[in-house]
Length: 268
Image (cartoon, rainbow, N blue to C red; front, top):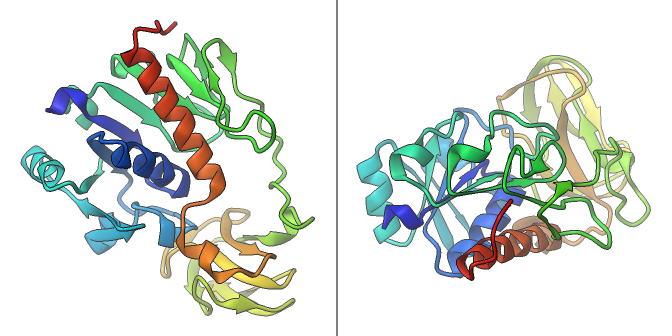
């Protein structure tokens, strides 16, 4: 069974979207995470399972696992094991067939093409045929979700994607180093200039009105300039609790890449 496992590095909202697409398609999925994830869209991410021991997204359970035996048991129970394993060593232990880098770090953080028979990188930071076998485009637009078998994804622009005409205005960033203290919860309506949270003793106010789509977990240490929250100007609360269209599209690209190899289409 384990030779068919897909290991996903990173259980944020995009990694979770990929995991759900594969899991619902019948694949066995394992997610690796860091000990204290700094995930923003926590209601649609499996990463919080490492702190809360379990997390359910769209009816699928992610459960923290501390051993290979627990991983195997959870897979048999049709849950998604979430493992604290920043180096992704579990991929070798399980003899995973596929490793997907969903860290979305915009650069390669330890991914290599030899980690599994098929390796897939999401977004910029990877070159197909060198760092990984295939790359999936993560930039919104015409090519979102496209499977790249040669070359790289589009470079990181450094500018948040626009929603209802708002780009950088909808992103909350830490004004200083410190510990975050949340005032509002994910799904709450937000007004212009309203205090959303504190970093240390410093207020973090919203630049726009909308709904708080995501915010880093209370009590986590953050650094100045780090993205800590996301306000959706569309104001639709339900969007905070379901996987985004972007994550589903990227997940579809990963699914296509895996199935193409199964059908005998060679990788670089």
